[in-house]
Image (tube, rainbow, N blue to C red):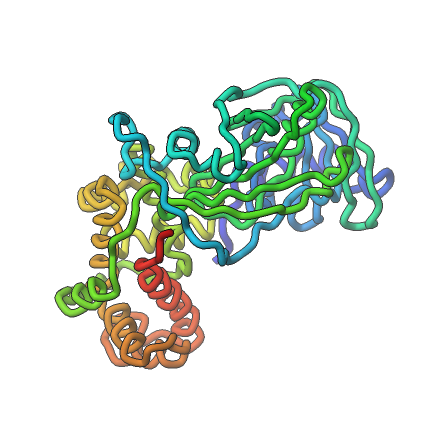
Length: 436
């Protein structure tokens, strides 16, 4: 069944057709468009903010295009290399930091927003540690970029396109000034694969023209209680694509005391419950991303539609379905549909309980939710007995022993779902992480 098109997809297809955008780009290499024109189809604010490549409208993806703001109300579309892909797996150790003992208004169990994460990172000394000097929290929010020129690579030609920015808008989640450095931080409270470089580049150009100190661009992700800082530099001030990763730093403010013996005890004590035939077997490989989704719902504290979840999360619509369904499978999310209204989702009562716990207790409760299901329980037991990871074939074999719907699916389906089983078990086995 073909997935329905999003409102952004539909609106951009109309604009592309009416303005003959592809023909103009083929002729001159770019297309400039105003927010006034975009607003004729749909609000420009919703039509132009694509923090991750996966969020781009389908017509952009199909033609290798991206969009950049060039002033407060104008944009340029072209085959620009706009995104930077983050490392897929970190090898950095996690350093433990504490909040000051007199702080009562911040709880490690409730760090589910970018703003609270930034404040925790500052108060716990993470930012001072990674910069190597004492800093003050000096800048926050939206501001005008001023005027500057830059070059950006065209992915189709390999050449560079010159762009002039005139008082566009940029935003800084947090700016921290030390003796010799000024760090500008963009934060995301979720696991992501890439980000649009503009979020660092436009503030970098603004502040690099204003101050003498070194301007340090930093991207921060907060997922599964781990604060991961990516420290960058731009090797050429006027080159958008000169972004280079300098170092990576990982921290945590809630020390994990979960041991492998705890995991074995929970495995042995957890009672298996039959799978609900009405809920599909999970097709969501990254368990930390499920936690990110649960955190978003906890922070929202209300029912959200699939479109709303897709809008605020680094997902495309298909992924939203997979991860919401996986959370329902675990009993942590509930689905509601009232007459003549779209389906909406919220944390279940148990989901609220789990996500309100201290991270150590929360992870134990999540572990119990996973191990209540036979395939995951038996796969973990076999994994531990073997003392090495299971192959997809071995997991498929375990699937075939039960009565779950997944057991009667095709071999291709079982192997695809086996990736989710492996991903979740890998998360479990990483819980006893060493803190330094």
